Image (cartoon, rainbow, N blue to C red; front, side, top):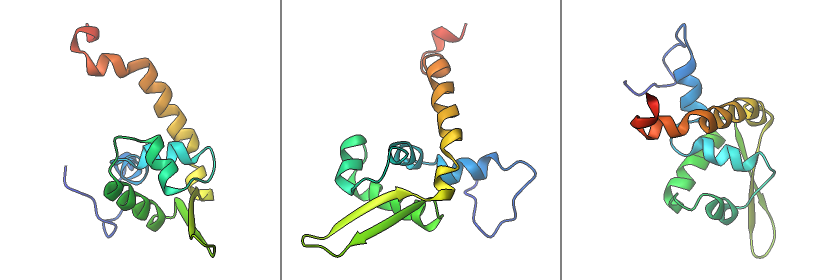
Length: 117
């Protein structure tokens, strides 16, 4: 499937657009952890050990650009930055919960063809 661009009008089925916004790459994992409250970069990094710092930075920037995550920098020494979900980001929490529950029920069958029979 070709990568969607923001200039394309939404189609009759926007599932792909929604997945791109909240579920592509590591975005869903990041949002899942931020639902518990604001976190610093290293807290997110510890929560998602498989993600590299570069990819975490890129995903956080994309989520911020889409309005799902807020980056707040505090004027302290040493500087402190926290990431949190915006109202728009929190509105996806139910979708993320539904995906997590679906995976609990079906993930093993997806990963092991023997369980699909």
